[in-house]
Length: 563
Picture 1 (cartoon, rainbow, N blue to C red):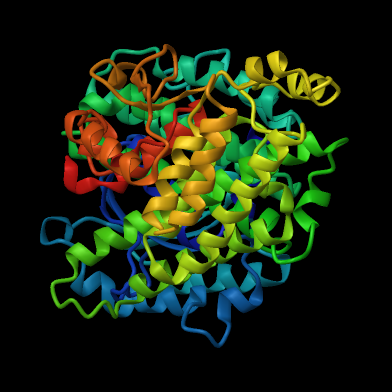
Picture 2: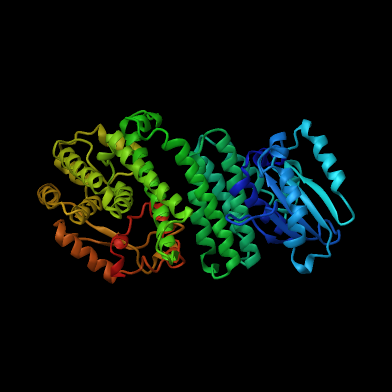
């Protein structure tokens, strides 16, 4: 375990990775952390500051200057103000005199040189000489390298009080099964059960969230090094939902909310890395993603493409939500901050990727499963928020309706109520001209109601009429319906352990009537807005649950004015 931790720490970047873990470690060691990493403020060489006693020693002030990976000559004494020696000088010249709280002024000060790797041999003598020169009665130096950090993590964050005996083998197995995401999740799921099978006191809850976060980071760091992020993506999504379901009743406590925010940050780091590594470099190339799926037949490719579409749409939903929250906070209404620009650029990149994914992989015009409407609605709702995306969204809608109606009429791979790959494979080889068989495969649908609704929202009456005629002629047997959360949904929404919600049948396939019908349902079914994640300010988390557990994406999102 220590070897794995050392490799993990050595792979971390300084910002948002190593400096995220260190404050939690110091807190577990019993220190009081009074400065955490921040942006936009001058740090005077100090990334993290804490006060307290280690191993029964007298109380001291610990000042950490954090650097990533190994300490080389360039990171020790380079020309950049970010070099470690520059930071150490700043700490002594400015920080100690002006930034240490008054109540700690009399305590001895320890400057900690912190990095995830080790000091390169050629630099060691320079560092040793510097420390010897500047050490005095009130000031000392410590080297917190990857070896020391991993030992401290094992002692303070992986002790028996924190980790049951069975945890480490489970983590190892989840990491080792890098190419088998389903099996990796199985072991990680057991690990999560151990973590949350405790008294839900505040300290225990915070500890549990931090343990999930660290375990997820350990898995991600290993998978990232091997350029295989599929399992990490799935585990990040699952961890977020399981953790929320376990702690949602305690979020009124700020410390628990902060710990969850840390896990959410890890989720975003992993999902962003997945897209940057696996999707964005190839999505603008014709059929590239389809080829990368490396599947034996078009069914596998179709299923994975819609899965990727849903993931991209979710990423966009998070960015859109964060951008909207930033809008609300910007009193000046100028929207000129660096954070605003970063989010806007990321959102544009995701929407371009959705466009490229559809254009370059035509199987996304042909849903094989009716529940692929979940991924379609997530994407179309995202695109509907900006008129700049209307041209693409309309052409996509037109192409989908053309394909699904043609496939059904001429016995192709039309949308069915089947779910498993094996069932779809058998369906493809069936004699589809048998009307009884076709009707048995299309007993109910959420896809056609969703397509009808968006035809009306995008003001496409001719296309809506084509779809209406098709449904009235060929799908008389089909129960057109949609799903909404109800009063039982909160209990199961984020765990997926039981059925919940309510389906409304007799969905009108006429576009205008469909909008009226949906608005009425949204008006009288406000349970989506009562979900804990939505009420607590994490609306996209409810959409993560929809995609993960395959709940239809609630239409409430399209008509927030009806709540």
